[in-house]
Length: 72
Image (cartoon, rainbow, N blue to C red):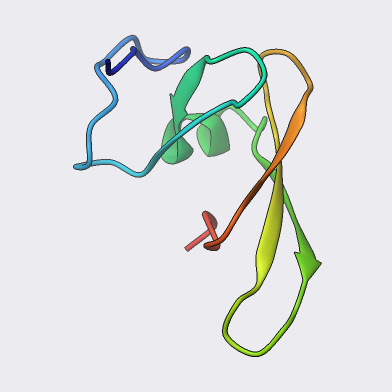
């Protein structure tokens, strides 16, 4: 089930890049979190074409990994 962005309140869809925290299940649009100054991503590993990135949740402060660069 799709949730709503914790910033703008709009439904999370594929139209805007969105992420959902693995720990608190809150979702957000990447552009909304970036505008709020609360978007944090760090490259965890750099291995050929399979990089992983750590995303910090702006809601609960938890961290999870994704297999794509959400900054792009």
